[in-house]
Image (tube, rainbow, N blue to C red; front, side, top):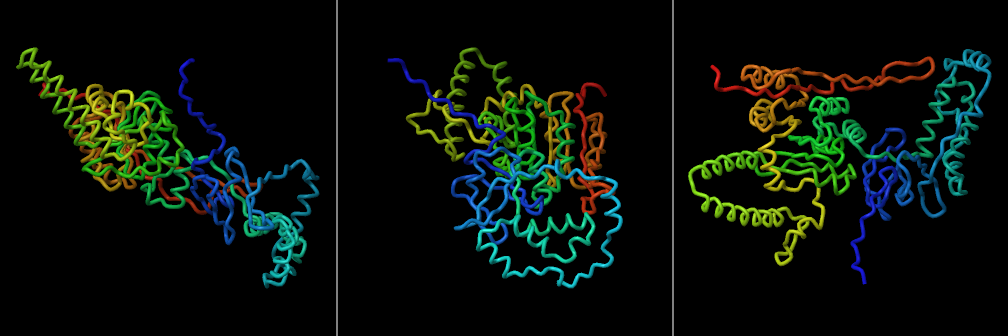
Length: 453
């Protein structure tokens, strides 16, 4: 009888939702943005209706759903927008008809609509859909035909959002998550706009097989964006000052696989510095003591590293292994979650080779205090990028870096993103937009020669 092989865990299709995945629900074209985790029992309240999210499981991202009034309770049904093939008309006649109409003679006295609220409730009890209610409102409006085409579209859209709200199923990734937080809760991500985030990754040269050192005090959006760009290669080290790690809860919304989650590690700044001191002490000991003493020190270091791993697992509280089952094979039986404590071997490798780039997004900390301590951890000629909402902290940091001759190619960039409304005969910038997306200080670490005067 042949030995049974362990069944491989099926990798979900990233383009199709599955049970347990996180999604971004765009309700009524950006009027409301909701992060949700799909399950058979999860629900979403839209207006005064509560709908189950069960129909969303197994659907491709980008699908559009509409709230329908069922016999028992409201539900979400798949909606396919109509095509524009049947709307081909004579452009000249349509333009003349449009020019002959305007809204000057319309009086808003709430008497143009003959359909009352009792009539709408009666239609709902009879099982009328939201689109049928909208068409009934259009047919019973005395002023709809007198409005311009643009006003008619606004009227239909307003009634559709009220009586037939639609939900767009979006995939949560760096851009969509950043846009949602910037619109809903910008303080949580330090007012980091999506163009600033993309420029931050480009300035830091985040590429495959890179070891990126990140100081993320904006909820984990930067750490998740770096891990997403690495795509399961390299490592992301999220460092922190003090004994409490910074919150990176936003990473849960990226739907990262176990392979990518294993690449996201945490390590305090004190641990990075202590390993450097330990390495220097070990070099001095090897120069002074004999070979037998060095071999005994190596045996002692192996026993200490095993004990440290066991203690870190107990303190971490995730993927605990019993003492009688703790072995070399048991360490790799389960993939660690995102943000696990970095092992000592990885820290030593970072100290020997250095990090390939540095990204700092810490609006609550002084930029110069962080850079002067973290910059020596980079390899020579490694790029770095620092984000801040205001200009003055970065200007002070840039001046100090020039005085200390720690970096070259220093520049402060201000990203600028303007959204335009592009429609026939009415193309202009959107009226509501952010004034600034913050500032980014970028540069390259310089190898300073202390032997020269």
